[in-house]
Length: 70
Image (cartoon, rainbow, N blue to C red; front, side, top):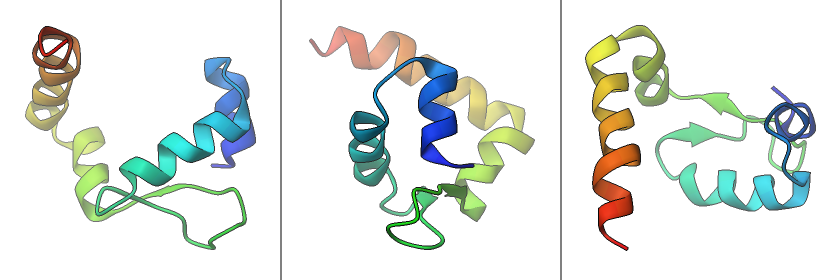
């Protein structure tokens, strides 16, 4: 998916989204063609789409544990 399309979908500036995507791509997401503005799943990130317990854990960490750290 092109980061510009994703940025439009979530209503954030594309340049800001690209920086965040690069931050989290270390072993989780990937840029199949660096500099192309595309982002894709790795085997690990795809498991969060296909394996529901992984998604539940991520939602808990993102919605409960991470905000509690602030």
